Image (cartoon, rainbow, N blue to C red; front, side, top):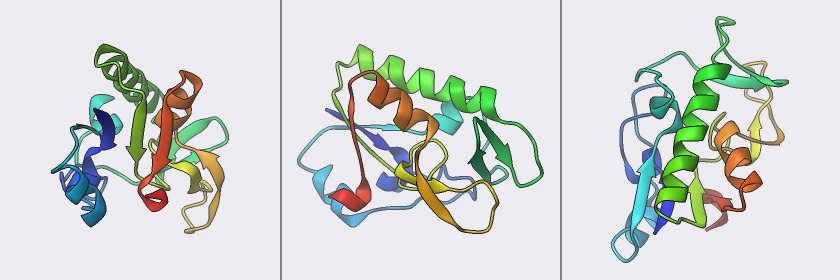
Length: 137
């Protein structure tokens, strides 16, 4: 079993209330078991919600609200699930402040992408879980 960003399986959990179904992942889910997760929801955030980006060591909304505690809590909850189910691999949504793997928005809400990991992706990697994005499939 692998962890997977729920939005990639079509679950409407993104900040804008939409999903982001990925045809490759949906096809894989018919052959493999995926545990869908949305770190933002697990951290207590609603759907829909304000857009958020990583700025330095914080996660902030476009209205300057600090959501770092919720993003950290969501990452910890995902890690608990990964440990409980003995998951060693995850496929996460690229550029997300939670799930981004190698690429995230720069914190200016300008659309600029920089190198970096989302809060959940970084925590999973730190704990020995292999993380890739849907773009690496």
